[in-house]
Amino acid sequence: MMENFGLLMVAGVVVLGLILGGMKSAEPPRTVETLDVSRYMGRWYALAHIPTSFERGCAKGTTATYTLLPNGQIEVLNECFDAKGRKKVVRGRAWIPNPNEPAKLKVSFVNLFGIWLFAGDYWVIELAPDYSYAVVGHPQRKYGWVLSRTPTVDEATWKKIRNALEREGYRWEQFVLIDQSVHEKGG
Image (cartoon, rainbow, N blue to C red):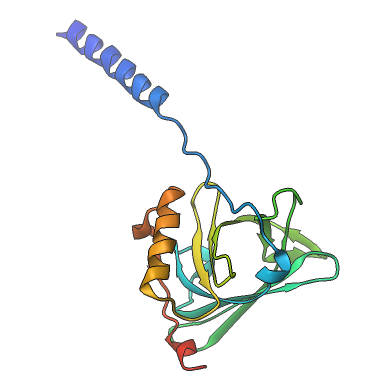
């Protein structure tokens, strides 16, 4: 009986090893080949996202406004409304660590004596040719945002966005739509 148990344990370890050994880590999502940073600046409406702890308290109306600074960095202004309708604001900084990969940015919201700490990856993985919408991801797909220059997009655009996300290894089911009704009437 005990020798059968031992054989089962060994067989289980071998099978587990084969399964894990055969699994390849997913390649990171591809980013867009070109990103004109000056065209990317301005206000974006977050239409959908993979919920994150740092967005806690945002119930609707999430926007991000990017401003190019003289030093080449980007000021990030994120705004949203909580469940009671109060506006929440957070400022951060973004930069492009490698000029040869302009769609792979770093973003930080923690500034200590002028040093931006705990930067996260912000990869532009899909971008409309006219910069009307963008899809932002993360190398391990921990985060994701669908951004638009307008508070809503048509169904054909949603289809393009969903296809882009799925092509890059995201599941659409991970994303939660963000209520932008506070902005739809010019609010």
